[in-house]
Length: 454
Image (tube, rainbow, N blue to C red):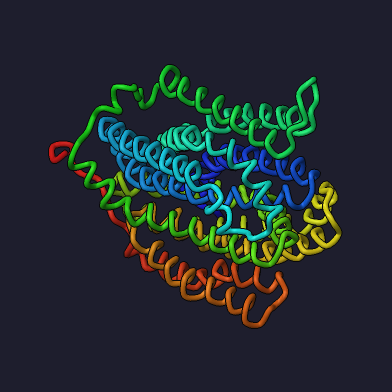
């Protein structure tokens, strides 16, 4: 029988996780709509967009790293209700993310050909990718601002605003895709460039909306533009001391995804298009996994900040059960829906067959993802052990995943599905590490400082 505390924990986590999951469903549905509409232009257009998105994934992971670093500190300070420290930490993360967005914009503006050729050598893919990149690069700074501000609201348990903003973005993006890609309502048919224009407009609108909310509607944090000018050397040092391993881990994970994209890209346009489809479908089905991990990080971080360490241990044990249940449910769902979703795509039979194989692999590995990723980021990292995830990923990705995929692809010339399985094998292998690490409880560390010291 569930205890009252167990029921209360699950209720609290689900209260936070459901809006996060719904936001992710909406966000990834935008990707699915882009995928379907661009896919109707052919494999080369779909592959070109996929290649460019590998570049953006590096920025995405850096910004997610900044958000995760902010989350670890802010949730613990939120447990102590230290709003002044939270505002300073948010300002550090926001300014850092804007710098990152500007840097990638400049890189893709100065070296677009060289960057795309890292992922594909097919002329048609490069041509389509350049069309997309020339416009989509203007979204980078807007993306950075939006993601950090939405993450800051999650840290203080304001989770619905991100969902509502994503819903507005979805409607705008999909509607404008229909207008600009295919040339409706008197607009020219711009193809892949139309998809990029639609995304740019949607990014601008969502940035405007989150700024309006944070500035005029949020009553918890009361963050103001003048707070961006505030600084505190102690908190700056803490942010980068504790944040650097987290940021580095997410950036290296982004690099891992980019290298995976480059490996798949060498297998041809069909493999690229199939991975693009599989990743998009997986992202939508996997929202419960990532929503639960994010919610768990908020709950664990706040409880550590309060100094209630026995409660933290109890929560960690019970959350692991929830992670497994959600993983099994997500894997079963993905396996069942894959064939029906693929009917929506207007691509070759070879691409559909390969995408089906990839999704079958993902329906298995998502169970491991749900347990190990949620345990390591939602419990261990949020609880204060900020180096472990970085070290664990470095070992598995660069000593197991990438070498095994390279050997399978270019030494044994294995089928793409075998290469893809090698690239996802760490999701299962990390489970053994996670179960040992979480249940030793050596990860519980309060990273906050007393107000007098700050």
